[in-house]
Image (cartoon, rainbow, N blue to C red; front, side, top):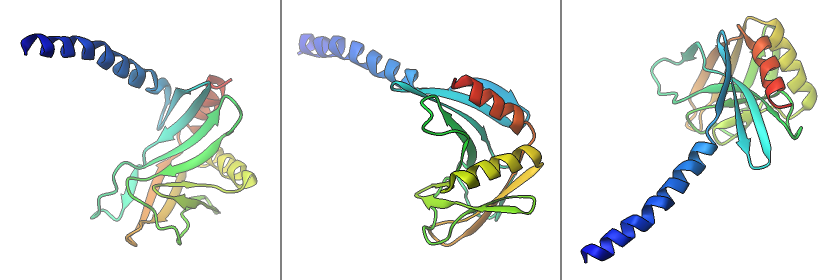
Length: 171
């Protein structure tokens, strides 16, 4: 019995190593930190994604668990996305209440998909990113699947440099 157990262990070690290397290969690579925004890249098969990402500076309401919340602006080397804004929340979003991203007086409606929200129109994506480059803060409001109204304030300090780096990393 000891010999069979040893053979199984010896066979499993290379397999575990391959699994670990595969998982490690898909880990994001830090490309740079730009004040309140961080840029990462990640290989995805034959393609590569590069994104600027930030955590909110404030979350409301304070008495609920928000989980991990991020706002991203993504690029794909293949061109599948170019400066595509999105919100990721730590909870499912209510599908009948569209999240909104607001910079200054400009408000852009997003569409929810599980715990993410995207912008449907390419023109609205470009408009939001343009406003982000010129603004100081962005407020994103959303409603959880349970009906809790949430709001997040993101600093836009460093966004222009971060977007420049994300674009360059995916060329």
